[in-house]
Every structure is written in structure tokens, then in C-alpha cells.
Length: 542
Ligand code: G6P
Ligand code: ZN
Image 1 (cartoon, rainbow, N blue to C red):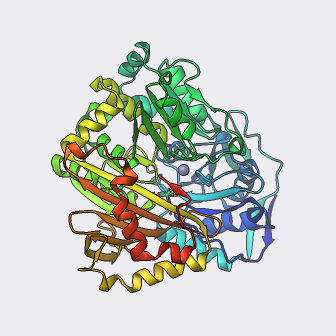
Image 2 (image 1 turned 90 degrees about the horizontal axis):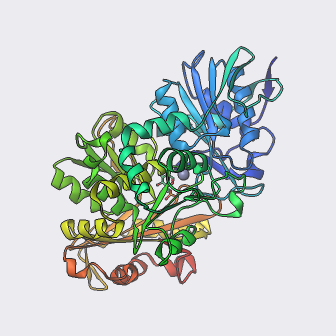
């Protein structure tokens, strides 16, 4: 039976950088999730009889919302929903399923790297038929539908069994429960030299992959241990848990510090990697060397042809604006295009679809390619393994040789989390107000060459996205970028990104914070970070 349920709108369902993210108590308010799901469908056209892909990162509330989406999709006329077994699909695996099965789109339930649990975060994101996050024109339409919604349609049916790979029907709609790993693992076999990787592990190469009790556990187990023969125990924390074991499933030097320490210890493995809640982020660590995400993109680009899937070369590279310019130098050497986009993977979609770029990356631990339309954690790890196997060198050697050839972009991000929104906005407003007066001034010995509020003109659909971060560029190529996070769920997070280019190999082993000390001080002088936030140091440094 299909019911039409009267409802009233919520005014806070504006999707952020990556879908709608709220605390579970917000999502579990009456009709809150139902309203948003119906608003997604109301914003779309032409899906009657078509396929929707559905899955999530397994966090708390995942199963409940999976059932809601199934019932609302059936009532709205979808022909079929492909749902990951157990409600599980990593974000890149969902993207791949949408593309492979030519689905109309997909719904991914995740709040990515944010903590999970009854009081923690949940999220709903819509991906379009190209497999990528919905572009702004769709997310804007979803938001406006959500503000005007009067009713939603839902099938009244018993819960669908999502734990058995099977095909059933729900009010005339087919529900296909699929193995979440199989298609994805097959795609990886086509992109990377699995034979060489098996040899690498056979030769005793030791790796540690930390799935952080999040979605990549089953993918990593199957690919690294079963298909590539890495020793049992290579994968850690591989059971997805609704609360991620009480941790932040965020692969960085703060939340995956144990992995870093493990690899750095004398007895530890040669290589360590981790992924986040929904499997799209990655962290790469080698003995004696943590690889910054910005460097990772550049090094993958410079070595891309070593992987069979990229043997014919890359078309171009895209990076988000706050990501370091390390990959710009690689693009220049390769003679391919380089694109600078706002933060958010969705901005890469058009460039990938148009064939202008093959590789994309962000400083926020995201790297990916045209194989899907999302960033991809396990893919990045496989790419590094492929490079290590093909070159017969370790991570440290590879990174240091890269710096020697291209120069080093010292890079760091300072986050001030849970700042009162009004104070954070005041900081940014004040900064915007003085952009015009900055060029020509000298701060801490650095002369400002240019200062602006980044706006992006999409070269494919010519859309314009404004206010994407304040940039202060200094003579000599150093810079500081300020922006507010679009993914937080409480207060505001101020992100300050610092970068300095150092061509001289003799100066490549300075501690990062030290190498950037003058830029860190200049950032505070320019933006009044302490004055506005009342904080004397960042909450997180990556
Ligand atoms: C998510 C998005 C990324 C983005 C990151 C940081 O992971 O998928 O594309 O770079 O969030 O966004 P934020 O707005 O918090 O800096
Ligand atoms: Zn994520």
C-alpha cells in the first residue's frame, strides 16, 4: 500500500560540501529524513522505472534510513533499487555501481569522517547518473523543495531483508541486494598490476591497513589479503561498527596517529594506510615519511603510467584551490592541463566527464581519478603499492626523489574547530573587507602580491561559484588561504592553509611547522585569528 503523508518543512535541510549532515537526534525528528528523501526525488525528473543505487557507511541509523529510502523510492515510482548487502556501500563503490549499471542516480548514507553513534553525525547525499555528487543546481533545487514540502509518498511494507544477496519486490519495485565488494574489486584488478602486487607481498613486504571500524574493512580484507596475498593481520579494525568503535574515522595524523607511530617504529611495517568512514579518503605513510595529500596527488600523477589503467598517460590534473601547487609542476612537465577548483569533489565532475582531467585530489586526504566520480581511498592505496612495486623503492625514497626533481611545497593546514559561527563569520567578513588594501604591504617579511576571494568559473558548464576561500599570495610563491569548513555539524571550523615552495634540495628536510613559521605568524597578523576566535592555537594541525 502506498500512503501520502502530510508533513511540514524543516528550514535547515541545505546540503553542504557533501550532502546533508546533521546529528542523529536531528535526523530522527518526525519526518525529517522522509522530508529530505522526498525533496531529493521532487528535485529530480524522469526517474520513473529507473534504477537507484543505495548504501551507506554502516554508521548508526544507516539501517533505519535504508528502509525509509526503499519505501519512499517505491512509492515515487523507481523501477529498481540496488542496495549493498547489510546496507553497506563505500562511497566510491556506490559511484562505480551507478556508472556500471547505468542507474539514474544513487543515495549514499554517510557523514564521511565524522563520528557515528546515537548522538553523533549522520548524512544523506545524492549522486547523479555520472556517479558523482549532485552539482549545485541539484542541491539548490533539493533545498528549495525541502522548504516547501507538504507531503511525501511512502510504501507501507514490512522491512526488506537487506542482509541476504537476493532479489525481491516492494510495491512493484525490484529490490536487488548486491555484494558491496565484488564489482569494485574487479574494477581495481583492471586498473592495477595485481600480479606485481602479489609478488611484492610474496617477497615479504609488510603493510598495515587501518579501516578504522568503517566501511573499507570488507573491501580491504578482500583486496589486500584475499586477492593480493598480504599476510593475515594486514587489515586492522576491519569490522564496520555503527559508532566506529567510538573513534573519529578520519585518516590523518591526529585520528590515525597509532598507525603513523606503528609504521615509524623499528619493528613496524614498511607501509601504512587508512581510509575514512565512507571509504573515500586515504592516508599514506611509509617508513620515515608521511605523505601529504597534496604531495600524494603530485607523485601519483608523475608516476601514473606505471599502473596499467593509466599506462597511456593522463589527460590533466585537477586540485582544489587550498591543495598545494605540487601537482601544478608535474602537469607543467607532462604538458597536460591543470585545474584549480573550489573545495568539494563535486567540482571535479564536469572536468572528468569532459575528459579534461584524469586525476583529481584535495588536501583533505582525497585522491581519485576518472574510474569513478568520487575520491577513492582503497584506489589511492593500490596506486601507491603499484608505484612501490614498479619502482622497487620505498615511500621515503620515492617522495624525496620527487622533491629533488620538482622542488618541495611545504604545506600545513591549521583548523580551529567549533568556533562560534558569528565569530568565524566576523573574521572572514573583516578579511574580505581588507582584501583591496593588502597588496603591496609587508607582513613578517613577506610582501603580499595578490589577495582575493576565490571564485571558480567552470570551463565546462560556465557556472560561477563565488566566495570559495580567501587567498593571500606572497611574492615568491608562498600563500595563506582562509575558509570556513562546509562539512561540520556544530559551530564553525576555520581552516587556514599555509604553503611555501622550496626548490633547493638542501632545504628539503626542515620540520614543516618550522618551515612555515613566518606564514603561520603572518596568517594571524592578517586575519586576527586569536582576536576573533579567542583561541591561541589551532585544535588540529595536519
Ligand atoms: C568532504 C568532501 C571533500 C572536501 C572535504 C573538506 O570530504 O567530499 O571534497 O574537500 O569534505 O571539506 P570542508 O568544507 O570541511 O573543508
Ligand atoms: Zn569520506
